[in-house]
Image 1 (cartoon, rainbow, N blue to C red):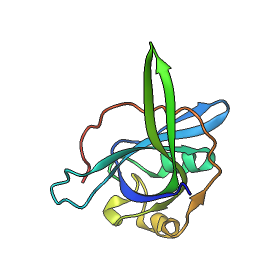
Image 2: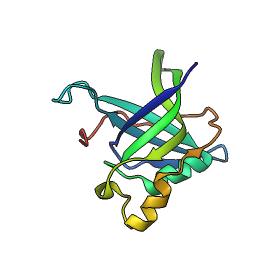
Image 3: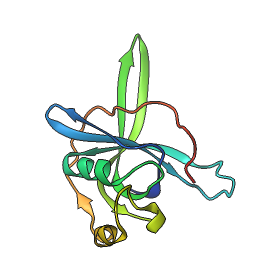
Image 4: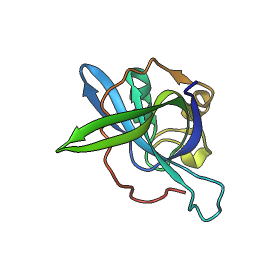
Length: 140
């Protein structure tokens, strides 16, 4: 079974684009480990499709905490004779996590509360990832 459940903070604003007539959202999440100094933090690539992609792009921003359920996918390609691999999490559903201070920009507490209980699901096709290498910093 290929199933991933995690919580973390987005390290940048999610990017949304159209791929073959379908909406895809690419993001990166920092998942804190057990060490207090943060040295075991993992930075993972996320990919969401269609309605899930639209919702993540609309309601999440850099630093916002998110809960993810999905599956691991490895993209493999060759460029200029060099083989590359990139592991990512294909988002199947997500949850809003965090306190009032974590709400999306421009969102009131009343708008946030009903959504916290909802979960957005979708069928996730495969596609390109659109991720950029590098991280500005750990948003903890």
